[in-house]
Length: 307
Image (cartoon, rainbow, N blue to C red; front, side):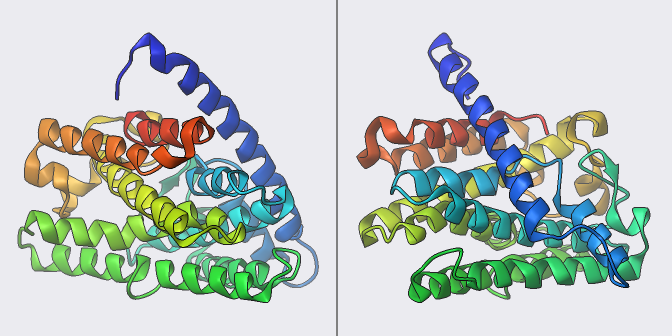
């Protein structure tokens, strides 16, 4: 990412907008995941622990900014953003479990199975995933049932066997086999595991706004490239950053022999690829002019962040 003075105002505007969006999304999550009460209190407490507070809210921010391009009501956009963040939180809770990556730190605090217990963490993840679809299916999210169905369909596709879960399976199989993957194989693994949910988040605002097919495709392509760049940046952070910077354990990819583009290409070439993808992502939004400046800045942020 360029550090030129001309980028500084855009970066500052992005930081402010992301902070505001994160606060709004947390407020929405406070309502959509009720405070703990009754016999199920422990489950609600674990859900809220996993989903509320912390995190970059990059996916939710994409929803809000995409929706803003098409004049979508803020409440509808926030409900959709919160649903996607719930789905993302579920994936992190399960990813951290001992049977998966066995992590003890997430977003600078103990992972859910450490703060509670393994069974509660499994149930909290399950409940967050189910609640995400419940929120998208409600009339408060959009008056048009066709739009609600399209949102549910898109999120299911991004999270399921041809998306996040499928990518996680490929990751596990590669680790078990202990064999080096080709660049194209790593790219597909990461597209499924990380990229599909980011791609859907980028397109969701256009779905809410009933945007023309051409613009929907542009937002999806933007999200696809940002997702790929974001994953490379994550792998670079795992290789170069400290746990204090990232809020989670680092160095685990190399230790586990995980297949990453950083491991295959080396740090300089991986960085160059991330930069190319970020620039390509921004280019997909050319038709929107200055209105999409925050989304272009987000593409640059995805590869420049330190957590």
